[in-house]
Length: 256
Length: 215
Image 1: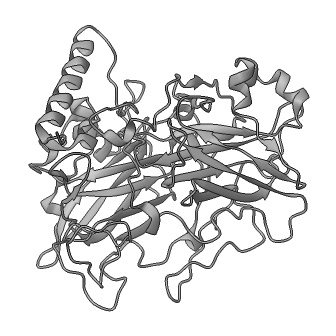
Image 2: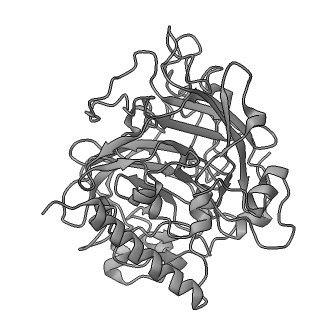
């Protein structure tokens, strides 16, 4: 019997109910997905069985510092994924803008943000992606930028398409953009995915649902912001990103 | 699901920190997925040692899953102090060519402290670096961040060097582990001078010790 969407939906619901029961019993909110999340089948052999070992950091702990990037690491058009080829990519032109913050609400300045995504048809410019949707010769789907002094960033791209995958029968990923983020401390490192509001595939996607906390899950969905749309040019989305980190990083001044 | 318009996002949008109240909710992690390969890796990503650095070391190993199979779609990032123990790092790990938008490689002089290496089809990765410095009495180590398809939240571990036995005795992390677990954080010196093997086992037998800084 192939694994069906109904099977996955049942597993997702059971794990969510268990989480909500734990919350009702007073357990703290869990923001990140469990590494052992059975509905996402690829996690089965790729999560540790042993608990993580806590480290008490001090100011010279290597992980409380982190890699730095600068103007040599990005080109002027890396933030505009529609200008990286001789022609225009197909699809709905969008901007994604927001701010990169730490948990104290302070901007993360001058740090590298990288993103990658499928094209408007739902296909990646990657040899292993053999989904029979067309590649776009005018779209690679990779962008980079450095955050501004207020932690702000902005990318211009096209809205990615949904695409099928092989977690179970008739499995589809909602449209999403992959983001890679650095803070001032290596412990703040984050790789995640941004979604678009109102996608009907949310309920069926075990990767998004691996974030069992409703409020945390919503933080992965960008907001459509008409103020960010540009007349006769592009639709605007806003997505702010908050980096996790040990409490020690909340009280140290960020690197200028 | 509705668009996020809760207090947290509004505070973030307004640039207001919690000012002694609850910290902002962190954005959740997600897997790096299978298709990061044309986006995140860059040429020379594992060549951290400057061109004329003395005493370069090679650190390499395999990433394996709970069945012992190689993980060919993992991404390893390293962050470390320079040879003198400095933790400032430097820009330029992924220097770009403004002419054609390609990669120029590092400038050959600066030590950025950062490596990024995807595993190959055998689940193998290699970095060429310098051995980090450390405070007197403290063992040097390289911080490792592991990403992979199937891994919903990255994992941190550390490469310690086998010759620093005296400093290891006093290290609070290593001292807190039993011998079998401690061994997973120690690279193995190989025949060639300056070559170290460090395998990462995500699950099961000889599972690597992964670290939690989020306390």
